[in-house]
Length: 468
Length: 69
Image (cartoon, rainbow over all chains, first blue to last red; front, side, top):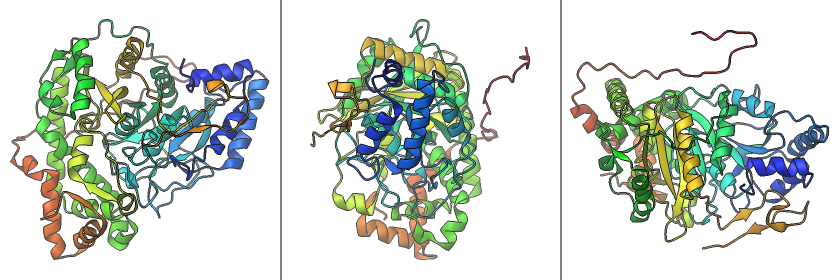
């Protein structure tokens, strides 16, 4: 059992080794806002401790609300959570805190304690993870590197041990890129699988989904079931009867270390070579779709107060405002062709494997953290494999499968046909059991449970730093 | 020509220029090229219909509600 996973929390509470209040106190002592990882944009300590105390009472009375009783969960700063203003990674947008997002209600009904709001890139646009407007979390594996975007804070919070579970969104790879870059698991569900009510509306209308980030496939499956209100997928069958496919042309040339980590896994799964048509249209179809949708949603603000946005966002959306309607519609036509291409391949295979990203993230100088970054080549490398699942609504999971020479995590992506979350989760579980998927311990790590690492109950978490 | 990697004063300058009505026109056109619109405009898409995202939310049946066949 992973020491910091949901199951370990349940066990620790059941055995009386610790209480949700102690876990909440350790979380607060880890400085979730402004600390070494800076994964949260807002935390309400008083409300958190009150919720933890109520949870502890329910556990003591033998009446837990649900399977997540007492588990701290981070929620991306796109969803309405009472007590927190929703800013979507901007310095000025503000969404109502109530009514709460439907998925937050589902988490609370399951007993979860909302730890706070996780940082995101501005409007969710950058896949790199630098946000001068709303704050940038630091990668727990190397604080000079970003976390990927846009669910940066959620991935950083889970990877650093602050919380076992976070909920993010994914319109172009945001539940896969940050988890891959931070060395944890992320699930992008099928389009419309998880309710989006209560999300700050900044566009992304036809591509955006919400889903979990966790440290194990079992936690990912349990969280998905709660978010989507479905039965927990049975992961015990592994890959029995599952036909794995790989498109080596699309695989292309990721970083050498990424290729060396992912290729043997694909080959070990006896992946059947397949050919996905129209992949040359994926990048432009995604850029044009999200560019037009986000620019339309923010049109009034861009026209009246463009200076309120970060420089990188101004540059991107300034161009997006010029996308002709014909290009947007042709992008949607291209999506139909891409959908047909995946439909043809999923008639042959059950899942498709690829690297999650083609490059790891670089170390960034202080000036870049302060001024922002628009890096088109890096953007292409980080999103090389993630866009299709958004364009045609496929479920996809990323699992950590190794590290490069600098100790930075490497992720493997597994996609399936719409509605087959069970297959990608089963594949992730099978890789875990085989030892191919393993969550690496980051340089900056907070033990969420007092008994982890043999520490005394009730003490503040020890932050382990191994700065590179 | 707009550089493909920008930060600091260069990024700030491009952000400002992108908003300018005239000078910004060229900047915006270059940005659209970086998005790859040329590939989209050259593609033979024929009369393929636009993609409409499929709504798949399963939810759960209400108490007493019978599943449809």
